[in-house]
Image 1 (cartoon, rainbow, N blue to C red):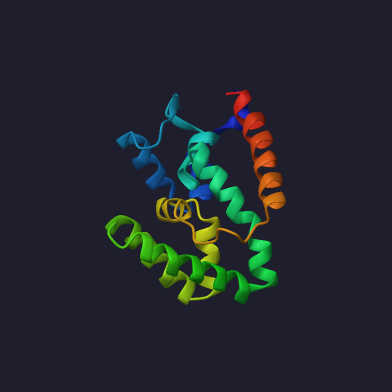
Image 2 (image 1 turned 60 degrees about the vertical axis):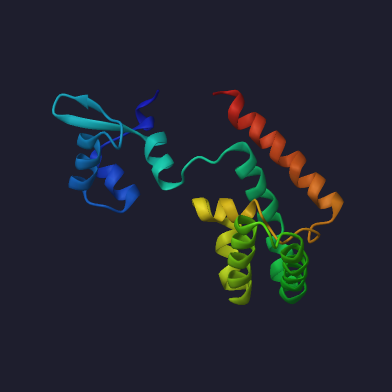
Amino acid sequence: MTTNDWLTTGETASMLGVSRQHVVDLCDRGELPCTRAGSHRRIRRSDVQRMIAPLLTREQEKSLWLHRALLGHLMIDPYSVLDTARSNLCSWKSVHREDGMAIGYLEQWERFIQGGVDSVVPVLVGTDELSSELRQNSPFAGVLSDVERRQVLRSFREHWDREHSAA
């Protein structure tokens, strides 16, 4: 690791938007791994970045890439894209009416879609747990063409292989 890979508690605090003392407390509680250099703590940049944006599984990241790709369609023709999602939700609710968990996800999507583009976009690109779960039950099937979908998946595979081959 190079010296650029290690941060001081002050640098870490700045990245996280918290106080330096909060970072020290996180280290002391074992919630943020650190190394001691005398009386100073050094934190791996990668550990801080994981706190900012938790790692996604391969499937979650692939879904994120597909949903990022449909943002263009949403911005260009929001009414058509949201209508497609509403139509899918309506069909799926009748099919899954006995599956309480699926219905729960579909109802959450309905609420976001009801809020319009500004409510939908954060879910499409969020790395939080709820956004990742909702994308696994996405009502936006059919928005991307087969060609677009294959292109995104090919780009994703290349990205994933490159990013994870060094690990």
